[in-house]
Length: 255
Image (tube, rainbow, N blue to C red; front, top):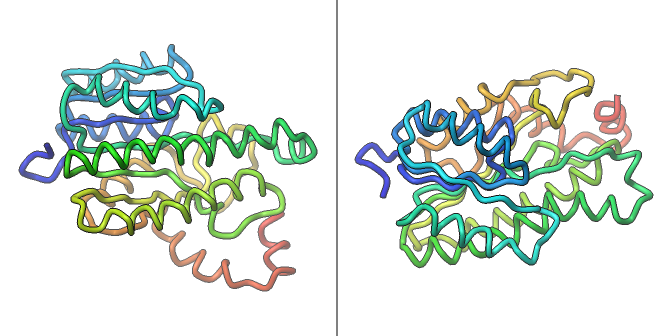
């Protein structure tokens, strides 16, 4: 159960080896999360993240290895993570994502499908199991990492943006379905973040680092806001950008 300050004490992180997830996990542990189960595809990075969690205050950590291209095992991954917590889960973070290479993959059926599987299909399957388990226990929170790329799709990244858009919209409905259950869902819509995934990309306005994103998330988790924006100015920037005429949007977005 969350402590008297409303802070989660038991956390499952799907995609726990990502730079943003690791930064957030450290802050959650510093804020009294004592049990953390980190799930991802790279065991070495998961082990490093688990040690970091202990350094920041976790007393119990564990890992689950999985492949986000295998949707059929998503429910099993969630079940294993919940079992390793050994009790109620206060917060589930869904941080699974793959940016991909738009121009290398847009004419490759298998590669395009991989982007959709990792960014949309696997999280959707996992969320179905997360929803069931949290509703059964009668409380809990879900944080899903979306992107401002989901708000309006760019030609230069439509595989990634389209998949994130699907997840973003699905989570809006999922959050509505949780009304009255004791479970809540928040979306993180972040701009470009300096991580391993974006290495080599040209800098763009309002780029942040993982620690900055984690800070915004921690502030957002303390609210009832459905969407957490990172940085907050993105809320206002995309309130305008989403309504730009298509020719102007193309000039702004693709250069």
